[in-house]
Image (cartoon, rainbow over all chains, first blue to last red; front, side, top):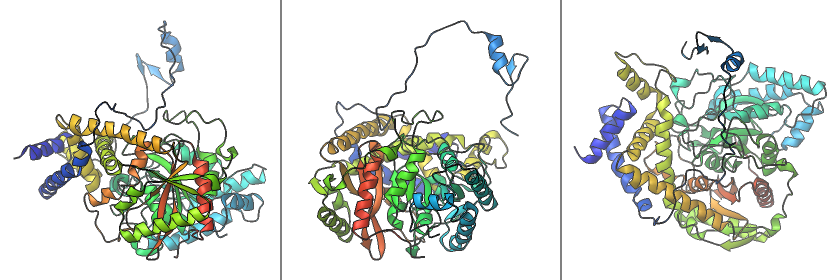
Length: 94
Length: 477
């Protein structure tokens, strides 16, 4: 098994997706095509270029963080329901 | 009421004045939807009684004297945007009966303005594509040629006059390419101008809600309602201080359009000629053109896909059959995950999730993912620099005519369809797709790309171009 095939096999396991053998063979072929297709991007000169994570430079406006003594009773009162030291929330799974 | 021939303002005025009630308009629209949907496969769900109830509520508000800018107007919503009243399938059979517990901010804003949601529109598997050929209910046919795909079902709904607005998502260009294929106008706004709360975006960085309509004027009418900060989406822009409609509409004759000639070399000669003719016509109209270069388009497309694949693999992880999606029969938890995810995710979603994971793995992360993030930076700079030399950029919206409905999504050919749209998504700039001409009786669209928050300029230029060259869009069904 080649490195690429091993990588593909691991990615399928990590993603926990059942894939038929025929599809896995097809994915293997497609992976070679994909890596070839991406080659031009690898040749772009990015020396000295910072990576970005958004398409604009906007920043979140955040307030300064101040530690203060909280009042547990006040928090409990604000919750819809509270019992036995737990905040009660609606069930996620019916 | 012929929705393709009047503006949103005129239609809303007709409903507000009582020329036609919202109920009558929606009743008529739903009848047309039933007929056309059989042939075109536009809707995953039609609203029916719910839409009529909404319409009655709008009529009651009007009777009480309330002024609603979109009074009674039918809108379609793509099926990856949450709307609590109808199922939201995300293009997966596993979610065909899923009702979202909340409604997207954009949908809420349209409804608060009096619009009526008439149905949810068709989409690719997990909204991954720009043709609808991977949809579990089959592709949406193009109103201009039903053998071909519409690209986006919302565009088909607008082109056939079934709705005045379609709310759609756009990551790599589905909205813009659909508008091109159906001969209508599609806006991908500046990133953050319309809230994404309630959009099931496979790509967090590039998924954006946009609008499809019949004119730039209608796009701006919708933007007045839709744009603005949303406390439920921290990525929405906070800088807007006035409604978009109050902005000064520019004198479009003075606009300078950047023309990256080399980009058009990616097209077959017939298609390139359509854009060259369009450029000549715009020059006659008084638009000035300046030649410039966008050298990174192919590499931008590749960077887009590396990032989008990585984000798909992360975002699709939650569809595990336990928290989201139906669980399959299984002997143990591991098997349940694998079986369920194999069913929930279609072929395209599985491909992207697996390849995305692979590109994020050790050894590939630096080589592909980090490189893509750096190329993203270079692409942003390239577009920003280009827009210092001109007011707008002209780019094709598509690299080919719409695909045949019977054609399978080839790999990676169908990713290459995004070559002109995905780079713009990386830039975060607003982009409006409008008809530029026809080829073989089918509409061909181009993009106008503007500086951030310049949607009004795009719309004004669009209406002038489309009106003057007698290419006002229509469907032929």
